[in-house]
Length: 370
Image 1 (spheres, rainbow, N blue to C red):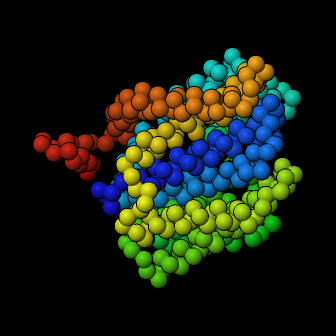
Image 2 (image 1 turned 180 degrees about the vertical axis):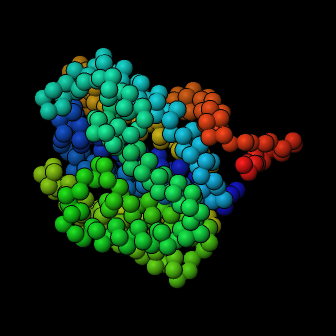
């Protein structure tokens, strides 16, 4: 397991991000009034379902995080998440803020222009602005707050040394989340802030796939897998019915169930099979684009549409904007993530007082006990 990179996860990660971008550019930009010029009536029949890339993101996160904490420590986990998340996030936050200051008047939000304040900017630096009811600089950031909540749960497991009870924790999460989805409360909970019950089961499902990949299948694992599938189908169809209500456009529940079943089957191949048809090294280069692409695409894209859409055919402007976002994502990875990761790692090492000794003639890093 430690020597295996699941390149199919890079593939799915990128296309999940691409689906979300496609959803924002061809559906919500127009439907929510952010970019009224991006009116793609014929495409909306298909792009309305692309939001489910978020579901796949959360499953991927559960799989990858549980794989990364194997034999890990709480401080190592904190450090790895800090180094992974914040360099690209802080740069993207600054970039989106600057573009908003120059082009924010081009984005409509309840008939008002998109504005920026120091309070909003400084609060967003922490990723915890939602906790204090402060608006996000980019609405795509709502998933980051849920990720932090997931990381907090994982950190508690590490601190309490409960990883050996991991499968029981996953079972409890899946059962409680699924039961909660059948209650009227599930339709009323603020799902953009609360991780339970609408998203918690996806993280748990990713953990289940990882346990099967690591330890093989068993009767207990099979039960967890069945629970995961029940949760995924129930949550996705429930959310689809809510989307129908919100947008006054029909979201076909069978289509939603089939798409999520396909994602479930995709992960089953990773979990059960030693070889995956998409485990190709070249997909690594798609995976590295995912996080920065997700961070920068939404509001900057809307502002580009509204600023230049009157002079450039919107059917051309949208794909050109997507290409620009992909190039920016690559540059952010090369010049921000790769270059600043060592700096952030040294800073967090000092902050967390992690003593690291690098053995001569070896690449292995050993953390000394304090």
